[in-house]
Length: 247
Image 1 (tube, rainbow, N blue to C red):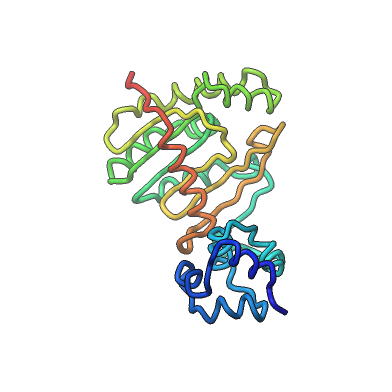
Image 2: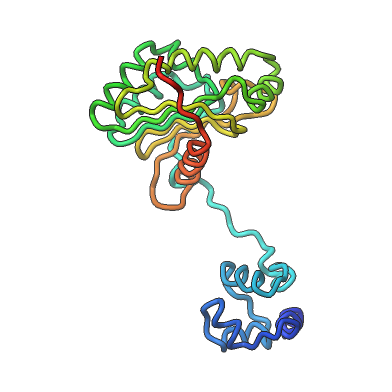
């Protein structure tokens, strides 16, 4: 059955088969089949064509509304914990200890690490001495997003106090070669603890402290997976963050 919606969109914009084919990098005969035979292009190609034509991709090709099959389990998912409180601190420490190239920590406070493992700063210095790049991003206690999170957790000013405590814990690392510590004022959807190609991602749930929220343990298996999604999120927050002063 011909795709009359596509035919009309092309006619309205003065698009020939060849011209549209050139833009989306397919053979003109493919575009002709889309129009005259009602064929559906691949999703990426369809989205590109719809954008060029100024049309909704699902209006042009309704078949693309069908959900793609979901994988039962991501190949990058090592473990899923019901809540952070279920994870012994040794799991975090062991992962950081194994890092050889990069450690990234994105949190609001996460003072539980220093409280349960007082040698955390020493560990991070040791990793940096061995050539590991260490980046720590903690919440700015004066930011509206941190304060809003406190209200959502129903801890009031508690989270601001924890951020100030975290700042006190990490400040001695400011200026240490290989280690950067910054404060950020972003809305934090997940806390991220990365060591090379492994990461522990602690979800944030409205009305619940992070210790009661789920954590997934990821191991990178290739480009474009879940691991890279969170790694890119860290990088985006890091660019907005402010280095803390030594002292």
